[in-house]
Image 1 (cartoon, rainbow, N blue to C red):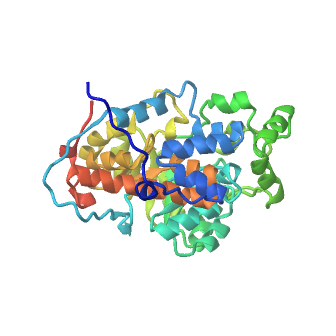
Image 2 (cartoon, helix red, strand yellow):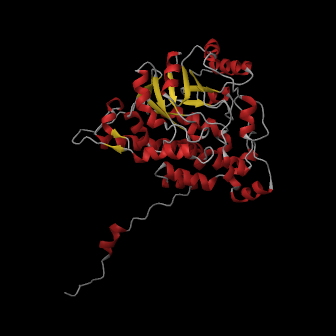
Image 3 (cartoon, rainbow, N blue to C red):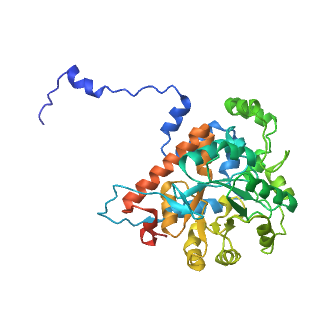
Length: 405
């Protein structure tokens, strides 16, 4: 074996290799720049947020089988790319409720958002406005209907409604949303009672968080979160003045388990704009609400947070799309953790999707900048996946591009 000849490298040879990255002094920017996926944002969120708050966002019902199956199906599907296509330009725009959206997803309604980060719903609405995507404010939001509207006056804003035992309260919420410029109503129908969210029970999670020995210890590990909670404006709610108890107790106190299809007539009497029914889990129910006049339906099992072992929305999607025959828009949520998941849902027949946890991980990781980072990640993944599939526009996606296991 010949002897290797070695030499001392010259500075002129070393100099091109000596390119240290600039030191980023902004700790939040440094964390967010290092996050390349929604999973990375989740990991940052878990470090930055008290356990009970993170688990409320991250968790699901009982054994969390519904959520695991939804994510598992996205992971197990197979893409089928078409080669030798010109994909130098990609258009991610589509329509939701007949109006354009810059990306094929909207921000889903989430409760208690200012618990996750003090910037809360205002930050989410600003990002939605800036990126040209719709945002649905939850009945259980922690910023008022009017304040969100003022914060993002040019955003497409929807209001999500749970039907309360006190119907007059629901009528008041719809009137306030209409007056504030919200252009669609999302009725969530899969919460007749609260699901058994065992992480919350084990953590003793309450609204607002109680200062117990456990939470004081947790505060020592998350001082910035607690400082922000205690030194910014007190938590307010989109739909009620205050609450002191668990989330499950609140849901069971307020929500009406007697609601039936007949109550959609009451709803239509108070809301004359576009109506979205969220929480559809069977083909039969999809047909029923379509025939009742829903402008869009959302195939969703509430992120796995209600009935464990519920139907997987992505599995249900092709059959629902065939059954409603274009009579209403079909959207999908639950289990979406990447832009590739969004593309797969569109290819299998969804007109659009909704994301919830994905942007909440960003919010917990870095407030408004974190939500923007989540959108940037999803956008890049949507574009790249479309290019690798050989697709230029959202409407070109079809079942030929995806195979379910």
